[in-house]
Length: 249
Image 1 (tube, rainbow, N blue to C red):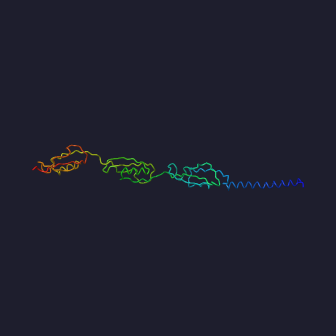
Image 2: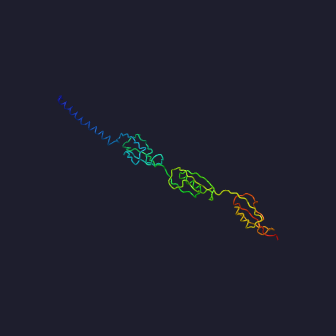
Image 3: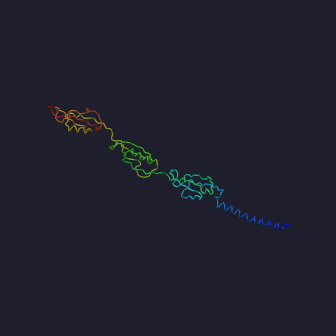
């Protein structure tokens, strides 16, 4: 049976109508697939957002980002601000069914690091210095004579308790002990034992020992002294006295 022109025209119209209906369906499927199935076997490329400088609390990361946060002290950045990120903003990553997320590390500022200053007055200077430097302070010392033991911390600056930035300079005032004073040895020969002891004390000297020897001088009178009168010695130097024990029998 021969195909007449009328029938061929009808078939062409039906094909054209079917194709016209199929094209919108295909287009709709492509749109749906790109919006709701981005992780197809072929994968999709995404751009990493740039969060540097933004407040971390206000961020709403994309659902395909796997965010890890690290905190770091930074005096140049306000606390809570993103200092850096890895990968950087603008980098492109490919997502797929096997790898549906992209790891992102954000470094967030804690602001300027501050330390609590301990009170070290009264401590040994070496221990105080080691303690302060161990905390992160810079330490300097000044020494001066005082009646306190050498090496004892007499004062510190700043003195007020509180929190201070890392590296703050702390000045310690440290005792250098008593000065090395020199005194003149008095002449004690001929004095009674008691008078000689008083004169030594007034001269800022001490007594090492007192021994006796027979002598024509009155009993208890000083016969000899260990240091020649007029000699300059350090304050506190001990002096030995020899006193008369009476006439030789």
